[in-house]
Image 1 (cartoon, rainbow, N blue to C red):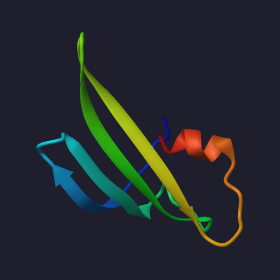
Image 2: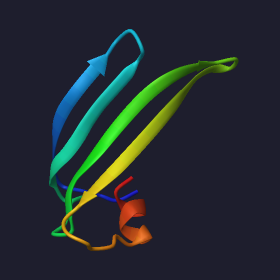
Image 3: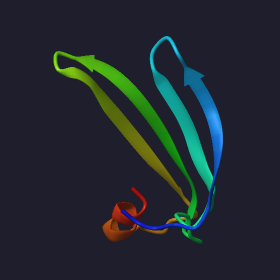
Image 4: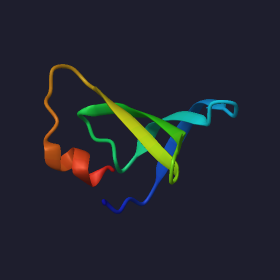
Length: 76
């Protein structure tokens, strides 16, 4: 996991009934000149052993650039 000094998030929604939280990282160290924002959705799902956390991230890139897998791993 990467170490970042700051991040600014925009909250898109909190669904208490379905245990879903969605937000975007819109400023901070995790972004670069190649990434406009990172949108995330966190969902808690019941399981037989308690609960699971499902996390989805979408990278919104600038132009036609490609993001290296190493950058994705650092921003998790």
